[in-house]
Amino acid sequence: MTATAANASPVAVLGGTFNPIHNGHLRSALELVELLGLERLHLMPCANPPHRQAPGCPAESRADMVERAVAGEARLVCDRRELARSGPSWTVDSLAGLRDEYGPERSLGLVMGCDALLGLERWHRWQALLDYAHIIVIARPGWHLPGAGTVAEWLAQHRMADPDALRARPAGGVLVLELRPLAISSTEIRALCRAGRSARYLLPEPVLDYIETHELYRGTADDN
Image 1 (cartoon, rainbow, N blue to C red):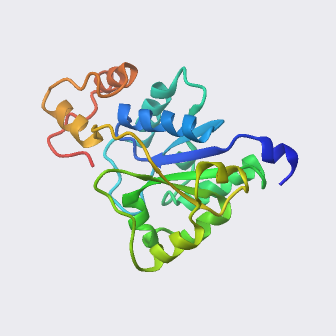
Image 2: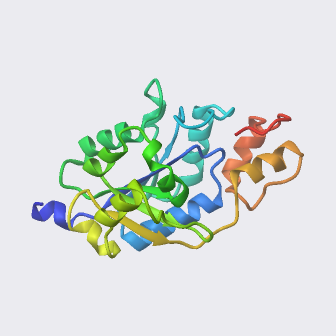
């Protein structure tokens, strides 16, 4: 790495359906920024999830809510790149685009939960992810890292000891972190909206206003 790249703060990306984004997402995002010294964390709404049914709420609306949620926090940005692509929203393609933007020497991280890690073998070109970025796994209470199998061996081979290792190289490592759990779920928020109850204080006011203005999540069935 050049001196400039070595001294630059890492950047990272956190993907999800964000259906809708809530204070649990945002608190974890801010803790990641501060714990890892990130210059920027991209919050990237998934347009066409490859491994689950697409949300009933349109991707544009979900991205609009992310935009409103992060307004005023310069270190958090809404990344709409997956909305601009047709077909499944493959994470490896998004990482390739981010790598092109930040250059070959900038430290780049992909944030995922333990649930995603356990299903990593089902991801498109999953073994290529580390060619573009580090993987930052968020360990939550009740979740356990894989103890055997291909992913467990891969984790043992690439695991990094501490957050400082992110700056040593641009990609190729796996960092496991524990963050403060905030017991809020998008499923719960959608259920409250369907029942005509208030979701205030579970998500930012601008997001709640958007949901009410656009009459989102008022159907009778769960909206994924």
